[in-house]
Every structure is written in structure tokens, then in C-alpha cells.
Length: 420
Ligand SMILES: [Zn+2]
Image 1 (cartoon, rainbow, N blue to C red):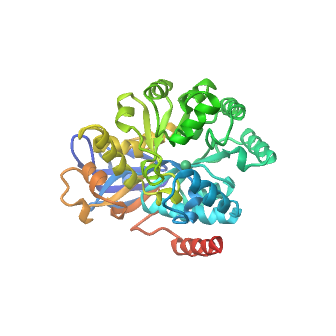
Image 2: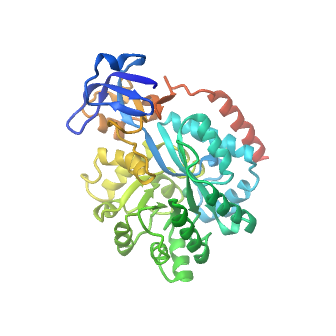
Image 3: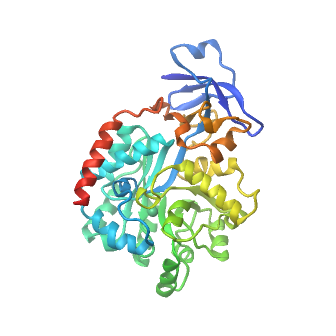
């Protein structure tokens, strides 16, 4: 079994940081707090980590990876105009090869900013799955449903695909993803809930993103989006939703009691003027909370560190200065998302998946270092990440990712064609 020893790394703990020698065996952390013995060093690669702190890697709970090709394509307008006049018509031109190019660009960006997992809602899923395997990270790949954007045949193919597949590999799982209430109606949503339940899949969707969505939902179905999902029996611990920007007090109570997870995307919400997630109230009501970036075309990056700082600031703005301390904000970007997707990951602990970041303690934003969590959440940016490990393998070392020049070249060529 492959072994790596992270020698003398700064390990943050609630009680203060300590120096530790961490043994990675195969794809797990085998020893974190236990002292190493001479036999642990047999055939192990030793990595000198005396200049590094170790942090859990990020788990992005909601994105549209290949939309990286549309970064900066249309900005400074609200969601529906942005989607219907710019994004959907251009997306219709994307070929399966373009999706591979866009997914590579997104994953390169994710790795460089410390993300090793993403939940992806998009089209041509096989391309994205292939690229995830190639580049060594993890994903929950959506089998995406949206009635106005699909033929009946494509819909049936998706259903068949879900019936004939399960988890695709050690690092890739499938998730049923109805796009939103305004693109999948009541009958079809009910069918997808039944399918997910029968085939043991999780469900992920966009929910309560804008005031317009709420208004239309009230007119069409006579209830809020949360009540809609509850009425159809889809709200439970296997359900997660992106945005959740406009929950009423009653929605929050229903959602918390169901055990579902809300994946907040504050940067995208603010940029599209969709609203602000009521994070302080959601925390008080005990809703399970994770973080996502949404796509590159509405964020306009996939940087979970930025998202983490943003949610921490919003929580304090909406609550008090004590709301959502640094360590709790970090959990929203790491283990909370991993937990929903059934991964024993997002913590530097024995038995957990060996996914982690080595943070450069010589980076100016990490100095001085009274509290590593504080520096990582409030001060640093992704430039402080020296190396990224996923599943016991380094996918970035000394800030270098294999093949990055080719990935950028292909993305530039593709963008030129899309613009013409
Ligand atoms: Zn989205």
C-alpha cells in the first residue's frame, strides 16, 4: 500500500495548533494523533511539512463546472434575463467536446483553489465524469432534468441511465438533479422523487432562489417551493438544495425538521441580485448548511475560500459578531458538504479520506499566526495553498497541476468559437 508521511505539519485543533507527523496509507489518514513507529517509515514517501499547516480540502456543494467557458460572457443583469437571453442560447451550441474542455478548466481552477469535490448540475455528464477521473478529484455528477430544455427522448434516456447505473467509481457518484420548480413541474418532480427513492439516489435542485420564483410558485402551486417539495414527499435527509435564499420562518422550520441540507451560494446570489440567504436565522433554526460557488458564469470563480469568508461576513452582518465563528464557517465548506454526499471526509482525522491542503506558513497573509483557522478563513486566499491531496494522491504540488498549459489553451480556443 502506498504510504506518505507528512512530517512535522502544523495541525490546527480547537485547543490550539500542534506539530504532528501524519501517516497517509492508501486513500486514508491512518495516523494523525498517534505517534509514528519505525515500521511506519518503511517504503513511505516523506514530505517535509515544517513550513506548512494542514487543512481539510474544500467540498463544493453546488456548481455547473463546464460553465467555466462562459465566465464573463454576460454580467450585470438579473437571473431570468441572464439565463433566457444569454446563457441558455449559448449553452445550446456547446458540444460534448466543449463540455470536456470546460470541465477541465473548472477542475484546474478548483484544484488550484483547494477544492477536491464538486456537485455538478449540467449536460453531457459522461464528459465531466471522464475528466473528473482523469484529473484525480471527486464529484457528485448530476443527471439533470429540465422540461423546457429537453426532448421527451432525452428525458427517457436520463431515467434509463439512472436505472442502469449506480455509483460510477470510487470517486464519482450520480445524483438526481431536477433543475428547479420553474423547469420541472409537479408530475415530473413526483416521478423523479419516486425514482430517486427506488434506486437509492440523493436529490439536488435549485430552490427558493429569487422572489420571482416564489411568486410564480405561489400562483402555480399555491405554496412556497419548500412546501411544494414537502407536499410531494421529497424533503428528507437525502435532499439538498442550492440557494435557499428566500425561506420564510415556516419554510425554515419545515426544512430543519426534514433533515435536508441547504447549500448556500452567497456570491452568486448577490451578483445576480437574487437576495441574501438568511444565514443567522437558518443557524438558529438548526438547518444543516453547506456551501457552494454556483457556476463560473454567475460567481465568477469557483473559489470556496472566498465563499467561506463571504458567508462568515454575512452571518455576522445579519446576526451578531459572534455568529458563525471561523471554524464553523470552515465546516460549511468542508465536512458538512462531504457528510451530505455520504463521504467520510472533510476532517483531518484517523480513518477519514486523505483529502487535504498544505498551506504555506510563509505566505504573507498567514503571518503572524496566532490562530490558523482565523488566518485561513478571514485573511488568506487560495494563493497560500502550496499542495492539494485527494484520495491519498497529490493533485497539485508546489502550485503546479499537470497539463495546466494545455487546459488553458483549449479553453481559450473554445471561447473564441463561442463568441463568434
Ligand atoms: Zn446553480
